[in-house]
Image (cartoon, rainbow, N blue to C red; front, top):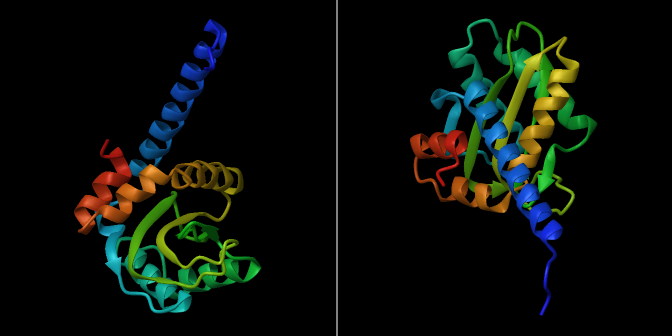
Length: 178
């Protein structure tokens, strides 16, 4: 039987609260950069390239200043530098894009997992795409770090995977659906 001291219990409570605070901050961030129109449940994507084409179409449909070819080329170029697959079926494709005036996100769950060259070699079925303004270097890294921490939480990803439609997927992403 392990008995924790009062200080150890306080540390556990504080660490748990910090984890919840971080999750809340990240979900608040998602609600600022994600829209229902850029959230797709059970997207069809037989390959990385086709998926990037779908993402470029999805973003351009709601962002008239952004151009399909520009987004597609930036996503492909970034992916050639190294896979944006994190492991455990998660990928976070991201890039800086000219004419992008503010950070934008897109969330897709896939109908079938696809190879993504992730470190654990698991196919990807859940993607969060991040596009930021060309000059937003530090903001890009900060947002990316928050999103990666959120998508590293198995319970959160399980809730996203359980979504059966795009509306529910969006709601879970922005609120956590606790």
